[in-house]
Length: 326
Image 1: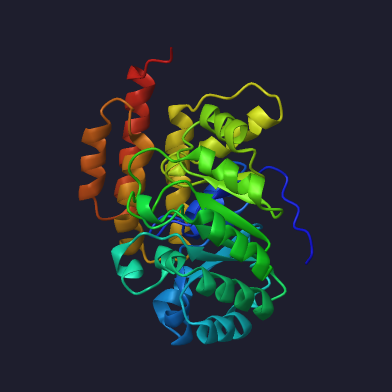
Image 2: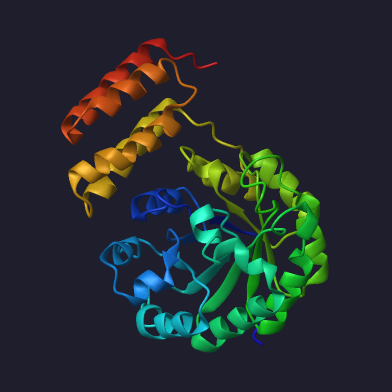
């Protein structure tokens, strides 16, 4: 088995309805080392589902985007990888999801449900590696619930299957995204496996990034909710790594980035869809700024990008006159 070298990489987690090409580009521009598509169903891909093909879209400017897939049938996984993913030169890695807690996916025996059967985990890992020459990682959780925590056994099975590295979200399936991520569990997995382990869970700041590495000794960090409305976290972490003074996030940065994400989205999506999808992003971006709720509500009522850009310019002028720069 070849050795996969990961040098403290900062990754953007795949998030449904969030990590599309536009947002991935924004994160990459801010220093993110590696991004992943939203989760792609191998079953849907096998049926040539148009919406699934759209999820796999990458822009020419994306240099470090990879694909995350989910499923449970090795025959379908192998066929889809060989026919649909291997020919894609833009994807250097394949990530397989064994951690998704969503009821729809879990109840279908996919995502985190796969962790119930360690033998099945091994079989899927082996199938993944035998189907491609690309790097393969698997994302897992600690277990289904507190009574079935088995991430060590699952991690060992994945290592034995030949996969290149593991990403551990330090929560159980039952926790969803509540409570605190167990960073000590990530450290235990890192101490057990010889392949790289990436830490995931509760990184919302540079301080969190430093602390999670101190606790887990992981080979890298994957950021999920901490990047929502805050792709600047990658820039700030890079400043910290390089020994530079961490640059504060200014309202000018926020409003510029909102407009840039709109522009990038409009290059490959219909305007109506972009406006609907960006509403949640705008809310996350401006959270905490003066009059954020009022402007968010106004954005949600607009129907064209021109109207939105005009409102953002109005908001910029308002902040210029009223924002406390302390």
